[in-house]
Image (tube, rainbow, N blue to C red; front, side, top):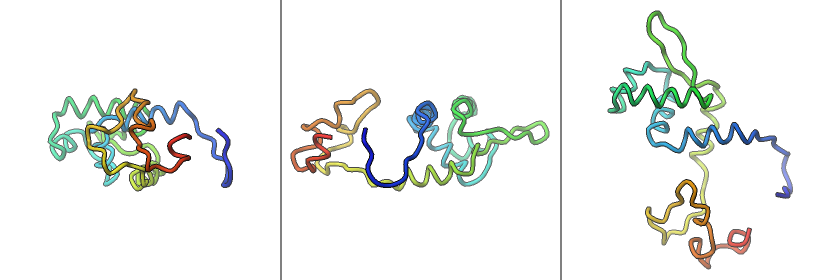
Length: 135
């Protein structure tokens, strides 16, 4: 892709894939949002979010494996926090993006993982700007 204007930004594709994996699941998104507020223990996260401790543990392990959270030993307990303070800003930036969405589409029309045809001409509609419809 040719880029015009603005500074060049180096993006590690593998790191981006890890973030995508982490954000692809609703429970992991909820956990990240909770950890944006403050570091927390898995048991507290489970109670706050209405999840089982096992489910929280599994999702936190995924987030840790993706490199988005880290553990901090606190006596016999383990507290989780965001791995990098910049992640809070990045998540806020992602959440504030204005996405081009056709108002006629419903939730059933939303793109799903592996659905690369979701942005084709028929889905976007003929009212989309030419550069959006044809790349």
